[in-house]
Length: 236
Image 1 (cartoon, helix red, strand yellow):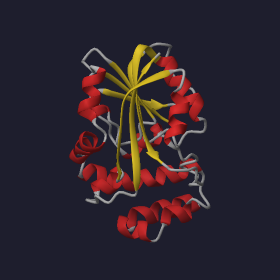
Image 2 (image 1 turned 30 degrees about the vertical axis):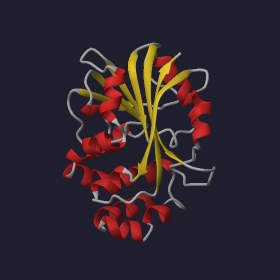
Image 3 (image 1 turned 90 degrees about the horizontal axis):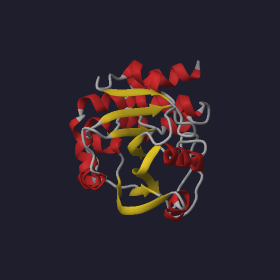
Image 4 (image 1 turned 135 degrees about the vertical axis):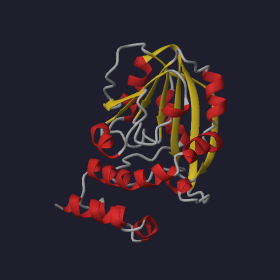
């Protein structure tokens, strides 16, 4: 009942007021993780539909997509996976046979129509529903801090990557561990990220960008609230 009320309110109230009133933060006190994330995306999808061209712009400007595609040599023959793809996945902007998994994929299909040539299905990072050594490139964009077990997720990404396959990781970066909210159980430092990759991946490119967030960027904001780490690594 409370979820239905908050969902309706979030869709009716203009987004700036939602943020000013901290509706998501208040809702997080009463909703579970999945409900909180679904409400966020129900609001986000409206902005996305009006400004989808800005997603590619954001990826190129702040997430170094051109550099990543060049270094990964993504072609029409590549198999590409996005773990925790959400609605604003990078998949429409890369070549190859493309797949996305997300715990809320079934619910997302009810509010958003993905491109028909991309396969999106329900799945968890801790148990990726694909065979060993299947993908050439795996993206995980602003999703690793949402999972239940980051180390298991990184291990699964390593498992489904082909020999010398590439892992493109994007995370919000923190100077120290802090308590966040149910949707974001983790706050990663750079050392945390390096520790998760150690022994499985070799870092070949990294950069930091202002953490504006795609939602803020679609709204026209260029104000950075934190930093975002973009790290490209290769399976070893």
